[in-house]
Amino acid sequence: MNKIFKLFGAGALMFFGVACASCDKEKGGDDTSNLPMELVSYDESSEIIVNPERGFYKATSCEMGVSGALSVSTLKGYRASGYSLIFRYFYLKSFRDKPLTDEALQFFDNDMAAMREAGVKCVLRFAYTSLETEPDAPLSIIQTHIDQLKPYIAKNADVIAVWQAGFIGSWGEWYYTTNNLNNPTARAAVLDKLLEALPENRVVQVRTPQYKQEYLNRTTAINASEAYTASKVARIGHHNDCFMASETDYGTYQNITEDKKYLSQEGLYLPMGGETCPPSGISPADCTKAQDEMRTLRWSYLNSDYYKGVNDRWITQGCMDNIKREMGYRFVLTTGEYTTNVTPGHLLKVVLKVKNAGYTAPFNPRDVELVLRNVADSTVYVLPLDADPRKWKPGVGATIDVEAGLPSDMPLGDYDIYLNLPDPMETLRNNPDFSIQLANKEVWEPKTGYNYLSMRINVTEDEMTPSYSGESVFAKK
Image (cartoon, rainbow, N blue to C red; front, top):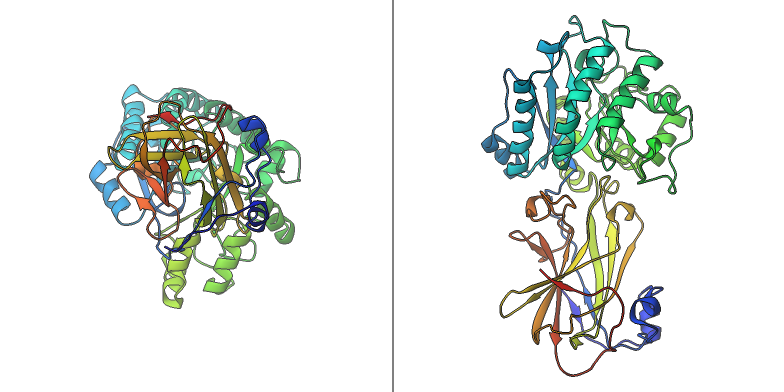
């Protein structure tokens, strides 16, 4: 990692693109443009990183309450092999005509607990059959089951990356149905129930763009002002289970050009994922086409096991590792600046530049914290930041501009600075398996999930920065 030591005035800060629109508000009007700042430059890593809610997944299925329960050891094996996601099919074959039993619901809860312990999340789907020749369930039964699942979904939303609509038809793909459910009325009834059962900070995915457009009675894609709200348009994403398999991806698209344009915009704010399948009428997607398509449509995750004929082609052609690196988000620090000597009760300034080298941004909420850790005794101080990694879009740089105060009683000494991007759910936030690792060399601390910024400040009695009177103050952990 390269470090450059220099004092920067206002002109140099402008050269490095530092935005400081909130400085006056946070520290009561003092001018910080001439603070002595040290610059750090960061080396990008080519490592394939196992980060949460992105990448290739392992497909798993069970008959809920009957067989196929998850084991922690198997899930930890997946994690060790490079998977932070599994696809979890819950088949409800025994409950096509009756409510779920307590034993079946406990089965679901146990599976979620196993995921939590193993450090993985799931793409979730329910279905009544895996065969075209078998029946699904009547709408009234589906609605009853979703009502029964609601408290269990809420309890375990922390390890549910996304919930695919499911329930209707074979494999829950909203096509083959023995109960006349492949129509707008039935689909809307199921979506209403799913959105009601799912906590507002999670998203449902539907199989084609038309299903969302039909449900909302609009063909325009979500925009920035609607994103990340509790509105229905912000809570329905997309999955494609025949990705690049035919001109229309087996009926995924009705108007190919317009539908892909729609999904490209939707994917800026909502999850896009799925699987490939045996190509029909076209050659399997080569590396160039696959990577272009995934970047255009903002893909976050993909089945590692199906369809192997397509996946193996990417291995043979040499792009599989690059797809593994770039699928979903990939955050890279480029530069950082910081004040090196700070007095308790005074101002600490840190400015970080981040780029997203992935196909898309995270689709679920994510916290961002600046962490100070005492070099001598490892005491930790934390500052939550007003930053949202979901807004760190591909190809667009992001600036994290921090002006905060140290506690007036903070012990003197040297402190290392870290960036922490933990899961916001209390059940996961202290588990490093669910924190985001930056794609830089020599930053990741596996035991804590912190990213070391190669910055060390000296908390000193010498008044090198102004006193701080704002509300953003580090707190002892």
